[in-house]
Image: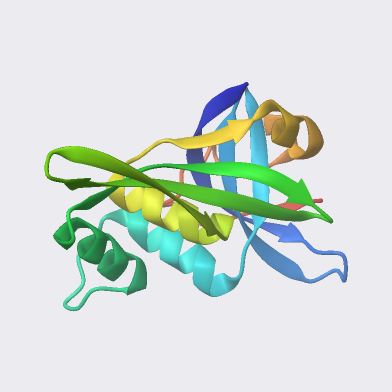
Length: 158
């Protein structure tokens, strides 16, 4: 079964080497799903959540604009696999030609999928299998004061 996830925020985890590593934290099924990302990816997600306009489009904003201009739409994203501690995602999109919808599915890094989802306000789906493998109770992830993504990240251990 798939569950619709919300982006709770960006946190900082402790990686295997003891270094701080940013993570986007999704919530679904009453659990948190931390996904490690790079600093640049965390910033792209954070900027998308803020809705702050820029003088020139950033990469994810440009992609959304191009998809839209070409008659397409991003319908949703899925965090659909976890192998060797690496998450995998899909982007579901469609384009209309002569009144007929044509469906597309694109492989993506979860960070890119989430960065697009927050820009177009589409659902983020996560399966029971992913949550069973990597979900954490909310008490295990500190987002700072019940935090939302626009707050400073705090630490948590993996």
